[in-house]
Image (cartoon, rainbow, N blue to C red; front, side, top):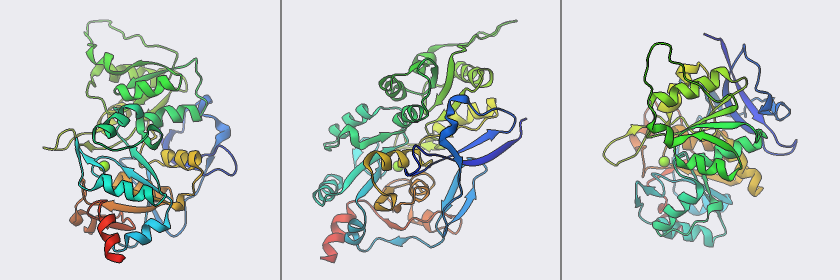
Length: 365
Ligand SMILES: [Mg+2]
């Protein structure tokens, strides 16, 4: 097995732009991919007044606040202190296909107070356009420009490193990734159609793969199979400099409201296992999307409040980005989990649901 060194990589597009901090394990014995854009990379240290630890399972850098989360008591104060709210979707805006109570009124109130609203999701199965339809179906007026899914983040990352247009991308994932790669002008193969492919092992059987594949993008994939594992593995192991990009490493996802289901981390883990490489993660808690948003809208990260229902993705995402953080208990995290002595991730504030912004506001007038 190759020995590995875990580093934080900060990619900067200009000397004055906010840094992008991505975590990746880099094999010591392999050359850095040529088209990763070495001029954009530098090693960084982390912020002060926080403590940092490294999760051995994720090889992610987590930045954790030491003080316990406070119940949100004065929503007006929080609202006035930021100009942008980034909302996670599932567990915050909706649960499955059901809108959470009070969301439309809360979003309307924030817009009326001049706040910028952005919706970020690790779910890569849909493109921004497809998410736009979901918002519309739920009666929410949200534009595509306000939606950032990890499917888009994968395409945006490739664009940010000037990934060559004559190279191809092998996709283990669903339609959302394909649509975003297509919009970004990339050639791809794989995706749902490879879900139908089977391997018949017989003596001497050898799987051919495309030597022009320069990146493998892995996201949640309901059509995951051994063909895809082998194809992606061959590309990463045998094509010089081939990138391994993950939309997220979520352990579980909520396909139905009856139980938790194996998440995108299970597909990513399979490829990490066979290649002995760690992926470059573009979804939460990596700050790629946060940095992209800050650059796109020209906003200071200290002027952002990240609102989410998961500690290890949403809250760490906000903290890694230097934002204020609000945990809502309308999704996967319970108050007892937040307050457990075993939990080391503490948001700035917590509340039951985002519509508490309305009632807590009224109580303070
Ligand atoms: Mg969520």
